[in-house]
Length: 77
Image 1 (cartoon, rainbow, N blue to C red):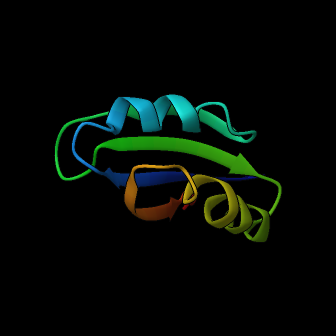
Image 2: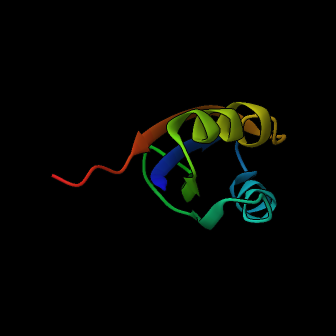
């Protein structure tokens, strides 16, 4: 199982709608609107890195109101 944080920038005023929509995507564990350089932070999981990438590109980035994403896989050092 691979987990990642997805940092999301949205259009002005869209953060809560984006977080709510993303929270319904299978594999998303949590989606919160936050303050700072990013508007929404998501914790997601998938079986493989490839599956995670497909979820981000095919599902998350297609949500209306998103302008940019940054995916940060969790590592265990």
